[in-house]
Length: 114
Picture 1: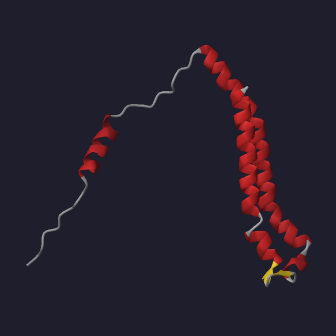
Picture 2: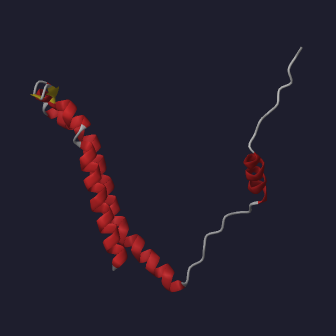
Picture 3: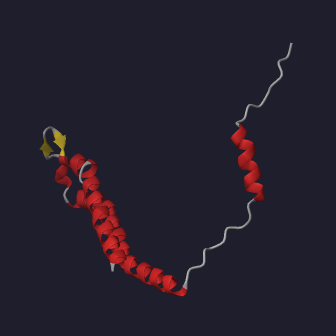
């Protein structure tokens, strides 16, 4: 005897599908002219520091292979039995990224407060 297969779905699935069909195009909200100018100024003020942060992030991540190429002796140097190259690769980038993120956040908030 063959058992009948039944698709089991959440009642939310039907609701989500119906909303997707009914929903129209998303419209960009319109701001007052003063708010628009302030938003543009804030964008310009935050763009420069953001680009600096992105460049520093790339230098950090893409600079690690350069460090290993320049100092191949990092493989022989051991700290607590762990090769220094592994420590540089596994430990150094994360605190540096956190500090870079905090620095960028402070600069962005300072621009918003002006």
